[in-house]
Image (cartoon, rainbow, N blue to C red; front, side, top):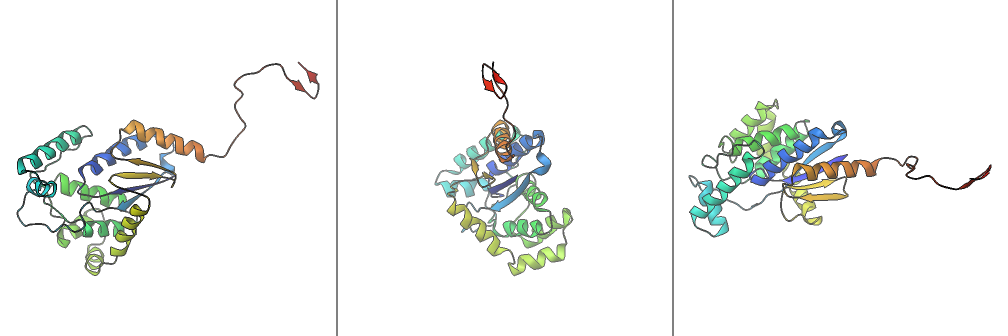
Length: 232
């Protein structure tokens, strides 16, 4: 079963949604046959970080509200994250343009480490306050999950995977993605948002059942009928 997930590493609901989906997948009887592919989606592709600006101030500026309101919104997300075991550290978070981070995820995918890279970037941003605007930081994170640091640096500086990021974003436009996280199951069903794990579990079961070849129908009731040897 193929599951494609559009998300951004600076989307707080995306990390929460990842955990909720993973919780459902852990209970799914056929989880070994589920292939997850992470797709790029930039919430603010033209964002230019302001050195020293807090994430609270950056969010407030984007929303056109006072900084105190930006902090309040982040406090709400902190509480939501705790429900799935994540301890968001917004006071440490550094506002980021994620174009390079998405390229790194594609680089990792070509080396069979896409999910590990996605998780490492989420943790670096939300839990550790690392600066994902810096190539040096991204290379270090790649090396931490076993990827070749020199190759990662070379590909990031060359923009090798830039078009793959743009292709994902174009595909998102074509299928009507308006917000993330956005989950697509077998190109047939979509789930938008960080839904409860129970919702993901139901969709996994439904998609799996529909993909299985038809077998002999289950007899629900038995009654009078006629056969080759006569009638009952």
